Image (cartoon, rainbow, N blue to C red):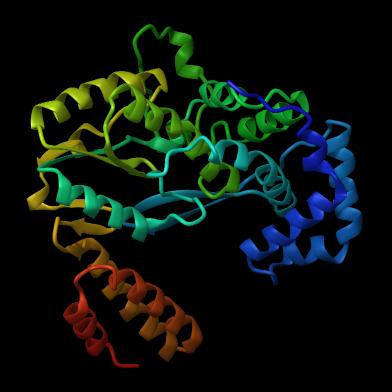
Length: 352
């Protein structure tokens, strides 16, 4: 298994940190006070970061936590801006190493992938096979085990400086999502295993990348050990297709056993096997072999959001440009399903 050394100098050099700053600034609101303050003293801030990284004294700062409600309540943890610069610098160097080892049918947070291509691929598989196994991992981000993640990353990184930085960023997320999960026990566990550090903050660039590294182990197992030809994953939701329902039941049992080695569990209530002709929920759509629909909760959520934006616009709380961008984004998503009349009806009901 090939490993990479001499990565750390590429991550911490001044030009790399400046490029990382530019990417981090694009990812947020440029006018935010924290970003503006960093940019005002840009050269000084970047040299300070470089010095801390070069002398191995860099320590991530505290997260700012808040909640969003999107079908369910989610805790989002925002790292300080200077830490986000480091995240971008790190990912620019090590992400290509792992991307080259990922399967083609993993679609979350990857260039050239996304929900629409994931839906297209799932529909192609639905046309080819009679049955589908739908799986979703229970409490995925809060359950990611730090020791397991570090081991997976160390399989390809043999650079002590880079591994040290990776470890500090991973460790900074310990406990952030403890309130979002319940204790899990796995075969062979002792009482001390309940104290294992776990959880990646939802909101970090590194968390999105490391989630794919973590589940790439599952992807490789499904493709290489189970020899499943028709498999597609988006984040912690994944589908396996086959002509034989019994084969899917056998694969499900194997996946449960394998996930335990990653200290993960399937969401048993959501792990179902059904005929593809009945449709399967995936990436916001109900996917059938010959068509797809938007999920009902997606439609209801947009209708509520549209009414809320109309009220906010009338009160002068949001600009019409913001409303327009939000509506156009939803229309673009909805247009990938059979929704022409639905879109006409929803938009006709709301008058600005």
